[in-house]
Image 1 (cartoon, rainbow, N blue to C red):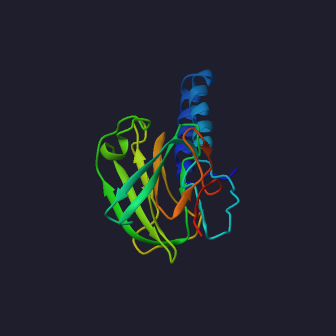
Image 2 (cartoon, rainbow, N blue to C red; image 1 turned 90 degrees about the horizontal axis):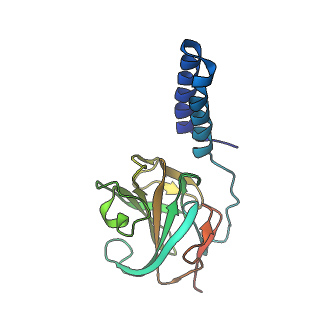
Length: 209
C-alpha cells in the first residue's frame, strides 16, 4: 500500500512522540501515539486504481458515499443546466482526489468559509472549499473539495492551465470531508444516493451519444 508524502510527516511526528514518551515515561504511555501513527499511514493511503480508458466515461473524483444527486444550473463554467453529485468522505475513506476526466484546468477558485460537518446539506455553500473546472474537447466539469468539521486543510497540487489525465491525483482533504462533481446534461449520471464509490475507478457518468 502506497501513502502520499503528507502521510510520512504525520506518521513520523506521531512515532517520534511515541519514542519520546516511551523513553521518558513508560512503553505503555507510547501506545496511543503508535496507534495514531498507524492511523496516519492508513488515512494517507493511495491505493492502485484501474482507470477506465473510454473517453466517454466520467469517473468518481473521490472515495466515499453518494450523499445526493441533484439537478442545478451553473452559470459560471458549464453555462448550462447540469447535475451535481455530492460524495461524503468519512475519516475511514481514502482522501486523495482524482480528476474525473482528462483535460485542462480552466477555472480555479478557493473560497473561505465555515467548517460545518461535511454531511450537512448546506456545506457546499457555507464551508471552505476549492473548486476546479476541467475542460476537454467533449465536455466541461467542475470538482469541488469541501472542508468539514475535522477537515481543516484542503490540499491542491495543481493550478490553472495544468493538464490532468483521467484518474490522476490532484489533491486531498484532511480528516473527513465532502467532494462535489458537476456534469452537464449531456452526461448520463449512473450513480444513486447511498451508493459507495471509489475514486478513479467507479464510473459515475457517461456522455450520451
